[in-house]
Length: 244
Ligand code: BTN
Image (cartoon, rainbow, N blue to C red; front, top):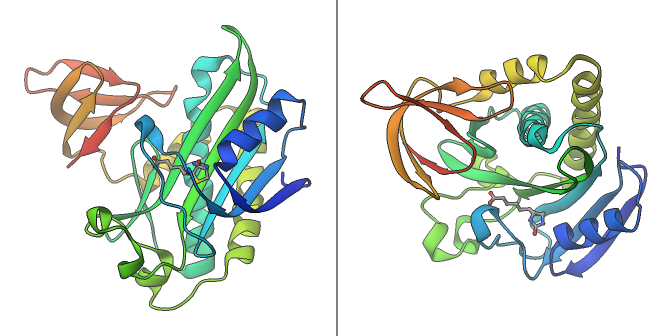
């Protein structure tokens, strides 16, 4: 993965560029990296703050032969790969908050956004967008996210080099992806659960259909969150915002 890298000083969003490249037939493993994003996108139609030179803003094209409903597994796989890489490079031990936020000390330092080009029965490409706050100081975050955001440098107490971290992420992603293609999601799920913070805890899930409170019981083999409410009903959550 990452044999072809498209590097940009400034883009609107690496997701958009990678989606275009994928549509034009770019091979699996093509990576788009930018120094700065003017219109970085987050999950649930949010913006992703992506200032110049302080973070890793990148999107990777994968072309797995899987049906679209399995694509969320790749988001979880990416979260494991990035967590492993952060741990390896900085010594910090991250937590994953379902589905794909990576936290240090309870604050978010990584967001992952997965987008699909697919038919009902077959995925053409999966674009995995990874945003990592690497060297921001706390003052460099917009005021409204200062209480909930952090960077690797803040947590480590010193600057972190971006290139070796990107390399380590690609290395880990490639290993896990090969394992996934050969053995399915089970081994990845176990690794994911090892990093997960929400499991076994009471959480509030804000979904498009309303708010559900309950205990997070784990994830399904497809990567959905299993939530047990106070009436002991089980809910399977595809997409939501989780609060503790
Ligand atoms: C989230 O937590 O909401 C996901 C954030 C994903 C941000 C990354 S940065 C690289 C790629 N390009 C984008 O526009 N978004 C993703």
